[in-house]
Image (tube, rainbow, N blue to C red):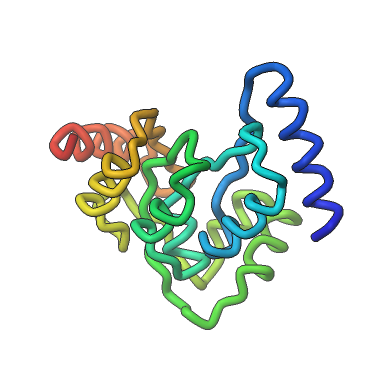
Length: 166
């Protein structure tokens, strides 16, 4: 923890010095845990969050709307991705360890969750987008589709889905 904290602090200081932000992505930890970690970096604005609502749902079992409110001071970007948690007893540590060793293929083979086309998972997009607006986020939502039989068609569908909501 201390090694990661020191590394992120150094990255944040450098980002501050050049007017940039280094963004960590939400993943195996809950938004409350990530907020505690980010708060421990001394209030620097050089580190932010790429909020991935699907990762929160699929792996951490966290509510993306709660995450927006928890991390509102840090959000610099968000993914538009959806998913379903299949096994609430899965270990986020094991999931990300498998990913570190086997890459996207190992992640996609995980039995604990499934990434699905946007709008077909457990992310409540109306509430999520409303929470982003309430917290003053006016940045980009980047469609991310890491698997599926036809990712290109899923991205087109995601674009249409988001246009209908925004």
